Length: 301
Picture 1 (spheres, rainbow, N blue to C red):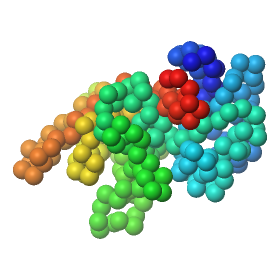
Picture 2: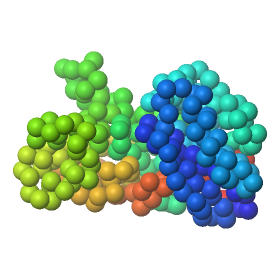
Picture 3: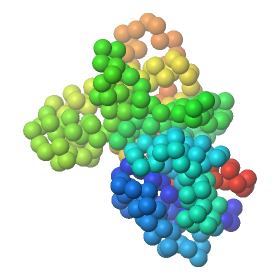
Picture 4: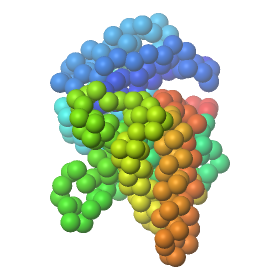
């Protein structure tokens, strides 16, 4: 593939970007995501594009929300609240005058893992992206599962507690959120909510802080419980855990330990979930967006 594709991974906090050419990412960077308006989002994207205007031959986009990757219509933009009932392929084509392909960020992560990551050669797999929510993607019989309403893999909205099913705090997007984990630790330690990061949580664990260790283990048990549920429903060959917090191996190690505890106390789990840490890290969405672009424009992978 000789095309030079500018890829945007638009998240709720940052826009990660890179120029992709001949199988490799060239220049990489990130800027803060404007959360106030579509106009300011486009201004930010155009400023990035201006750095590559003489090289870029196409635009690949990964972003939150429910999107029809064929037509470009977006039902909503997830954390980008200003995107509702709009065709984003048309918006991007008007802004850049280039070929465009777009897909949901969790689905891009799954495509990236299929193409170059831990799901290569796997017909049925699940990617869980642990971030400010709990996103992901599902691979079924070798293909990306989108669902009738294009929302397959929106794990954020799974209810985790019958008694409080209408309370957003009990959505998996909150129970499995790395930012909620950090805020829970901050509250337990009597610190400002924004003073604790994922890195700081792991540091406290490694230093032997029993309070933080207990919070983290409960957090991992919540994820392990839902992995068992997803294994029961989807019966995948493998789960891949991605997202920023997954860069520390302790996350997957602890989830595995909590899974084993759950299995030991039940005689009903005939199939055990196989999970592993993402090999792609923060590049999963970028690679998935590129893979989606190549498939959409019938380019050689």
